[in-house]
Length: 149
Image 1 (cartoon, rainbow, N blue to C red):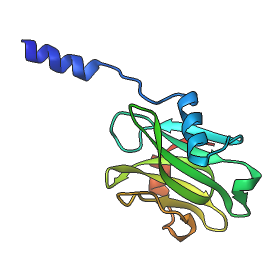
Image 2 (image 1 turned 45 degrees about the vertical axis):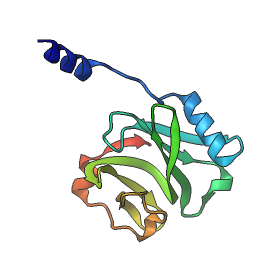
Image 3 (image 1 turned 180 degrees about the vertical axis):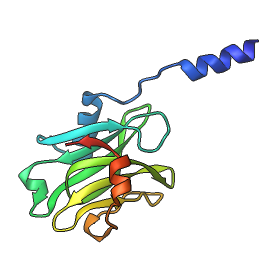
Image 4 (image 1 turned 45 degrees about the horizontal axis):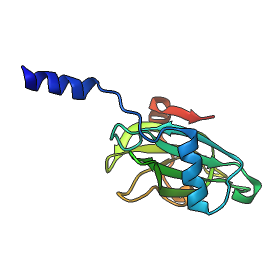
């Protein structure tokens, strides 16, 4: 009986780790060694560990060009957020696919001149250049969830 109660407690205990704007700002300022002013973000569990990660879209003129803006993924941990991946020339909308690669959800982003493409996690990071990635299928787009409009 005691084991069942312990298991139920573990299953239904809600733990909030790093999901806070303050924790994200601290991680960004630390990573860039300066204040990051213009950005949009979404908290979403990309790696299925139950802790929300952060997708950051830098919409600052210093981080954007004709093909799009630079985005970052910071993994959420119990201690806060830590840098995971950088993706150049992205445009909104940003979608999270139910399809996973190496345990991480695929991302669907738009990129200048190409359209919507799929970013597959390679075990370490998402691809730096989305314009070199496969176009997203209509099925993947429809089944994906928009996290940034």
